[in-house]
Image 1 (cartoon, rainbow, N blue to C red):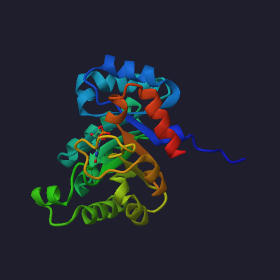
Image 2 (cartoon, protein in one colour):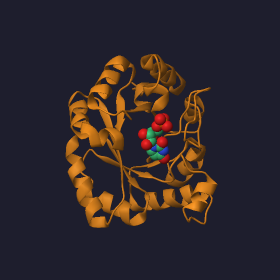
Image 3 (cartoon, rainbow, N blue to C red):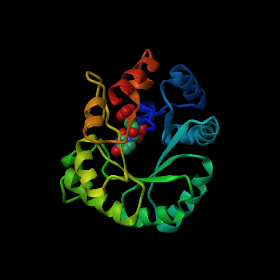
Length: 230
Ligand SMILES: O=c1ccn([C@@H]2O[C@H](COP(=O)(O)O)[C@@H](O)[C@H]2O)c(=O)[nH]1
């Protein structure tokens, strides 16, 4: 018998909210329309790590988007500490030294995702930051390094997903922020795609924040996105 993947697991809702109370209220409103939540800096520095443990204990999946980047020893020990929180994913920046350290510190059950080039960057932003490659080439270079080092997955924009898939093969995860339902405001995201188009280029998960957190009916928006991802 073939077991079909639950399309709700393809949507990761970014809980970019100022307090745990507001995050819990949003999760209640979304109900069973979502199964996977992301906690980043904003909520993480406001009690979000304890919330991560509680969500994981309830059977929800948690993505800790801490984007670690430091000397190797600090990254390795930080990843080791985070491994106890029950999260499914943890991000680090895709620098080789950082990725190697994260792989050394990774515990069972925690997958390391390497952030290639932030989805708020275009070629001009990469040049301003001192990189001598256009974004697509920098993503490809970092994806190849990540696969060689053995991280579990990549964060990139859906625009690069097909080329990243060719580089990293079928077994590594591709997780794409910068996702906007048709007509939604891009905000500061520069490399964007709709959920339906992202699904067609072979992503494993999409990350969506403001289109859901700012919606009058977040459950309905989450359900519409999941329908596009099915
Ligand atoms: O390259 C990246 C890496 C991480 N993010 C995070 O995803 C969400 C996107 O939120 P939206 O409100 O849907 O824009 C946010 O938490 C970012 O920190 C990213 O956007 N791009």
